[in-house]
Every structure is written in structure tokens, then in C-alpha cells.
Image 1 (cartoon, each protein chain N blue to C red):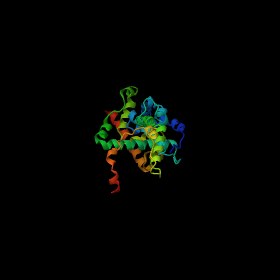
Image 2 (image 1 turned 135 degrees about the vertical axis):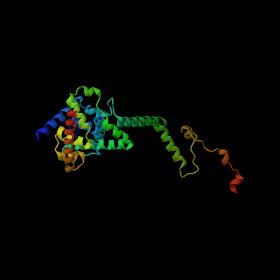
Image 3 (image 1 turned 180 degrees about the vertical axis):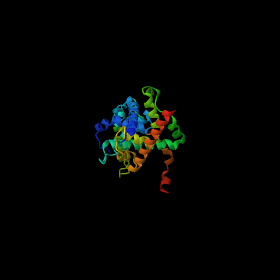
Image 4 (image 1 turned 90 degrees about the vertical axis):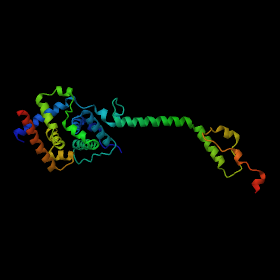
Length: 120
Length: 167
């Protein structure tokens, strides 16, 4: 490297060093695990946290609406209805204990047939 | 997949990495922060893995360069006008400029006016003391190509500074 090139190099190095005087942000503010907790976390981490928070809220709502007790009753009802003994029906106690579902059952009136019709 | 690098080693290179990210981001501090954080995310998620074929510093600089390039390509695709504006606008804040001596500001302006590859090769070889082969590795080009950019950059910078002195 000649003297002219050395001088050019020294000038550019000084200029870039002056640019960098302000310094870098803290490593912890940019490195992913720590950056998510930083006050000025950047976009990808904000999005990740929003998703995480939404999932947490959804989990709480689901756990409230579907308690373990109602899940076990559902299983008992399903077992009774699917039993090979077709004459066995869920008792009143079980039906009243199972929480109401947000759908309508068909009117029983539409299924009524006379004894005569049933033999035709 | 977890990173295969100790974060402490990256932290030791952090200031230098941020400075390089700033060069790759056209001097903008905010953009450099986004570039460096994206590069760290690539490493943290295991998408970028250190294989020991180069030094850790060269490898990290290469990732930063790739991230900055891909971000810039996306922006440039969105608007060619942005590309033109960035070549001409002084991107440093007035506060940071106050501290510069006149010559430093002039050298910095001349350097910033160079094409991206020339600017980058001068930063890597002059400022960060990488060899031409290492700089070529960071920039993802051949050593011969890096040497060409290096020679043109020096000649052009010399010309710019000489012309500035005559004005």
C-alpha cells in the first residue's frame, strides 16, 4: 500500500469512526430472547407477543366454558347413546346435568307415528 | 432448531456488527437496527448456522449483508423512486453531523456517493481490516470481482475528494 492510499484509508477510517461515535444499541435489545422484553422491541417480537397473548386469552376462555366436569358428562352421555343395548336411554339425571348446547333439537312432534302406521 | 453459537461470542462482535449493518443500510440507524435484529433472528432460529469455514466475524458480516440486500431488494421492487432518493439524500441526522470535522463529513459524503459494492468493499478492507478474499466472502462475490470494486472505489473516492478540494 502506497502513501497516498494510506492517507485515503486514514481519512475514511476517521470519518467512519466519527459516524460510529454514537455507538450501537444494547445487544440485549436486539438478540431475540431478550429483545422481546425490551421496551422498544421491534415488530417481529411485537407480533409474536400479540399472538401469544391472543392464544393465552383463548385458552382461558376455553377452559372456563369447557370445564373437566362437563367434558366427563359429555363422555358419559356419548357412551350411553352409543351402547349396543339400543333400548338403554340416558336418564333424566344425566340429561339435566349435561350443559345445554347452543343448537336446537328437532321437535319430537314430527317423529310421532301412529301404532298402525308403524306396522305398514 | 437452536442456534449453534454462544450468544456471548456474538455480543463481543456486536458493536462492529452494528457498524457494518449501518453501512449495509445506507447509513440509517433505524434500518441498521432492523437489519441486525433480523440477522440475529436468523441465527437464533437456526436458519443461519456457523460451519467454521470462515471466522465468526466474517460469517456474521455475511449474514448481515444478505439480510440488508434482501430487504433493500424488497424496497426497491416496491418503488424504484425510493432507490433514487436514497442515493442523493443525506441520511445522517443533524445531531450526529455536528460532531464531524469538515474533512470527515466530506469524506463520508464522498464515500456514501459510491455505488453500494464499492462502498462496502472499502468499509470492509479499510475500516474493518478484512482481506480482499474475506471481503469477497462477506459480499458473496469472487475475490477478483471484489478486487475490481476495490480499485474502482479508491480511484473514484480519490477523484471525488480531489474535485471537492478544487471547488
